[in-house]
Length: 116
Image (cartoon, rainbow, N blue to C red; front, side):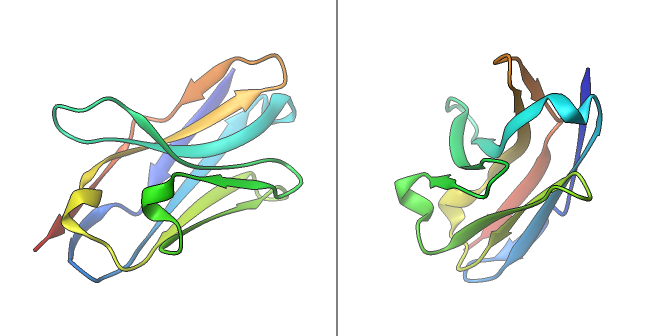
């Protein structure tokens, strides 16, 4: 089992920045890819960014150049630095961990609200 706890969400004005953090615990040796997903009201959950243990990243097109995902394997942490935030970035952001055996674990989510 893997437990994930997000932090860092909140209310920010358009153009502002936030940094999300996710702490992993439990069977951390089983974790392969970690990432961030988001779900806006009335929409499906979507991938925002992911990162492998070696640091290879993958981003959704809409956040390219604005968001940066990073990972500290020694601290079992993954981060999402969000700059130039837009109202359409408003969503619940979920931390995700995929194990080597392709099992997904999820955090409870943290709300990001961007006001115009």
